[in-house]
Image 1: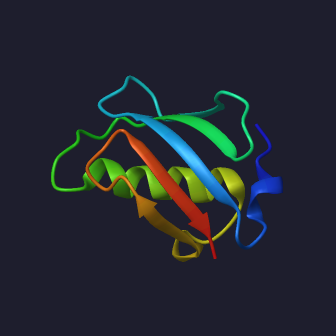
Image 2 (image 1 turned 135 degrees about the horizontal axis):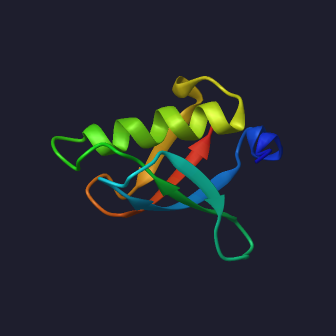
Length: 85
């Protein structure tokens, strides 16, 4: 899936995360004003490990450095909001 259109600085990305999944994957979520994605990671939700895995997978899918993704909301939630810097 090509998510390179999300690489623009200032883009806000809403993400619904499923931790401890069978696979790592990113798919389009519900259509809305903002970018909406569903993300599955195999990492368990312990000590922020799943969030780090989401950042890594999302950055790779978009084609940007991990350091360009900023978590705005949802550090301990399945619903997260990221901003591309």
